[in-house]
Length: 146
Image (cartoon, rainbow, N blue to C red):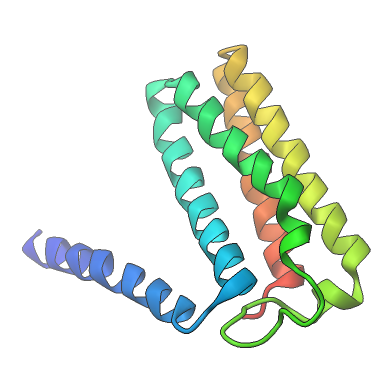
């Protein structure tokens, strides 16, 4: 048990430190979008915890922020903003239409989650959460460097 607690504590320190290093040196629009993606990730984690407690108001607020980011996301990828430490794949600019569609899919999934939370329909909230997470994963597979 003590070993697990120590490992967990190390992860709590290491993961944020790794993220901070990944964003180290980022400036301008690259830093802004990296910060927004980090916020989005935090929102997803928070939504997951709110699902268990059926805190629909918090889910709506957080999913609304995810939806808002999805709407403006393509604006944060102007040509020439792929310099390090950006993790954006060149595919974003060679297939900008596909990237925009991926952002629209994320927006649509967030809207579904919001509607489910407003209806206080736990099963639909779970399905909506899974759809948002899947849209993030799909976009990252196509448009984020490993």
